[in-house]
Length: 227
Image 1 (spheres, rainbow, N blue to C red):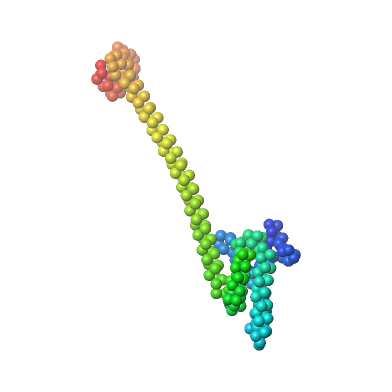
Image 2: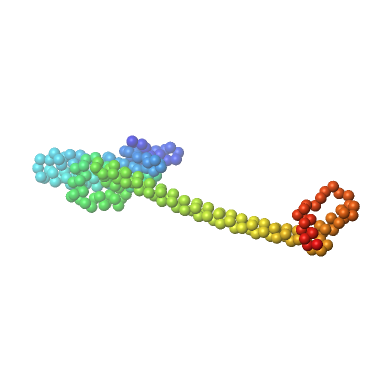
């Protein structure tokens, strides 16, 4: 409430007239987004209108009320709160009297549009909370959409890494297959065919070669089969 807008150095930011920018209310949402609410619109002319005793007085007060609202819209837009407060692009202009708001809308329907074009949302007590809730919901949907995009991007990265892993794994399998093939070929050269190496070294042992080790039965049997 009544919090001055400050720059990064902590200095109060001032408007074109040298006045410190001090919105009536700053609403902070859970994700640090902000909405500025202004409630300084003058209702003096409206009070005069409701208290007028003649049609002439009513007409004069009514025109003054409409003009006061329009002037406040212009003044508020010039302050450009969102630029300095890093808040929602639209400032909420709160009219605390429901009747004063509705009567203006009935008689001068263009005023709301004029305010909207100047980044001002004119609201009354009955629709303020509803609009704040809608804004929160829209921001939540936006955040969910951003999360969905981020998830899709991460899923794409994960999929590409998985493809890279499977390619590498297949290459490892191929190399293992090649190694197995080379092993089988070497084993055949070692233990198959007439005069294979297994039989030759075994014959040396039988001829008296001194050794304490023995070839495996599998190799001996294989060499005997092809002998």
